[in-house]
Image 1 (cartoon, rainbow, N blue to C red):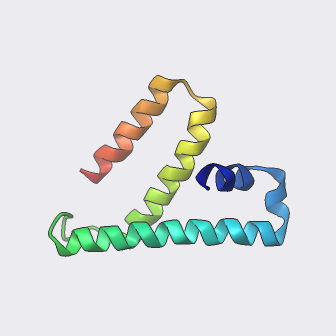
Image 2: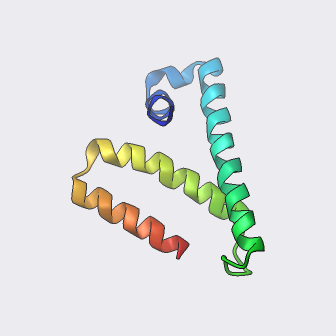
Length: 91
C-alpha cells in the first residue's frame, strides 16, 4: 500500500480531488499510528518528557514519505545514511 500511495502522491493524478483525499487520509492514518506508538512510549518513560509527540509523529510521516522518494533516486549508501540519521533522531 505504501508504494501505491507514494507513487500516487508523487504523480500528476494527485490533482484529482478524490485521489488526493485518499492520499491525505492514508497519511493521516500513518500519523495516527505513529502518534499512538509515541504516546505509549512517552507513558512508559521511553521518550524525553519535553518531546512533543504530535510534532514527532508528523516528522515520522515525513521520514516515511521521504524514504519512498529517496529510494527511487539516491544511491544505496545515501539512503542508508538518511535512515540512520532519522533513526538516531529517535534515540
